[in-house]
Image (cartoon, rainbow, N blue to C red):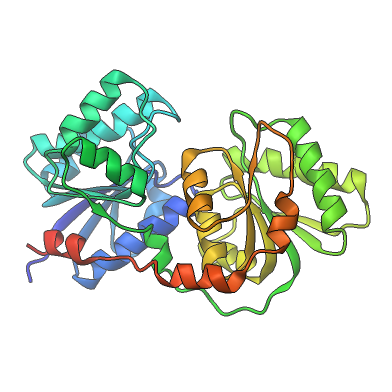
Length: 339
């Protein structure tokens, strides 16, 4: 089989656990076939230090990006939620621009297991629809994205998130509540204090481990939560963890009996490891995965109800059975990359 050149576009190099884990999955798959890889990254040195024998170009060095794509056989965009304007319209245009460049340079373009939307801007919808219809292979990770693209007349494969294919270590559970928080539009000190009050009341007998997945967004909120919790109950043992490797994050979440989480991939790791999980709703993708696995969910804008009781009563055997059905299907992807 001829070695081919691939360019990978995504939210890479920002040291965000979920996106870096997705990148690892894609790189491992391409390396099975000895293909050559260039990653578009906000931190090329970090990305090249993490993976052996790959190249990396800077996210905003358009000349290097165009040069890499022009020398490639295929551009892969994803996974994650790149094509949405909830973060910003500029972000949507950036990722669409990379895809458009690949199409203009007559390269195969793969949309890899993405969550599409929300896209509220009419121009954003028009561009997304008309660019994606020209891609060689499109796959999405949730039903709503699939239905949206189907309504646009775009042939799409519905897959699960690729992190469901991760191997999770078999670690004995400990008396630990893991808490993973991030900043967002509706995150404020009132919510942090109310969450701390509930945790102090419901989990005073457990160690509380607080995880920052991406320091630029997470660490300040994590420290505020720890401070609020310690002020309420100085006997609770707390720790804030940051700058961890993917393996350390997975190990930490796996050994916890309970998890309160905002980030999508924290929830997936918990599902894979049968950690009872309470989701905090800050984005539609959290609503989707909580609904799919019948997890309790907290709305940042409203008060707490019975979510902590529901958390403790979660049926881990039922969840484990549902997770076993989530097998990532590589067949469509492999067919395209090896044609």
